[in-house]
Length: 243
Image (cartoon, rainbow, N blue to C red; front, side):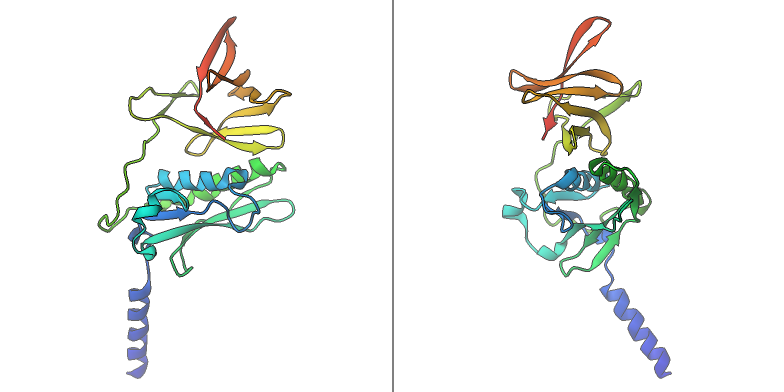
């Protein structure tokens, strides 16, 4: 009888202390993960934030203005972390979501890549790890205690294997440039690489490859544009780049 009572007490204790990821609405993403010595190394912090937003979380950087006035109870927030288990020949990472006491509430499976170039390897490994969110079926189950102003949501469509932005009146589509050994890779909000930029001898001028279309990315009248030739005609395509 004592053993049964002890088991019941233990089960009740675990049930009362267990937290589901669905109990949380907001996630803080640090500007630098502990595994790295630089902010947003390989664009990983930005990519994790975008991934969390893609799968329904309200994710913000720790220095976003939203936190200045709306933090409230810190334990209502999860914190994203990147667990780096990389070895000499393989890049292996997973995303962990921790509560205010440092307990892991949810973590993805390990994503891995054998790509030799680190920036590409981490991007590939992150995409692989993020597949866990597809089966998580996250849905916030509580009431909205703190609601920030709505963020603009990018609208993207795919036409003939090329990504074109859909003109909208209130939102802008932004793409993020992640450093590589000889330039940058440009990602969308999935995140997926849509373009590669290669350094030239001129500042703010890059050779570019977008889905096999070769051209140049440069600043014109204060805005980034992708210029290329289509059947002998010069095309100048605006692109909202964030470096």
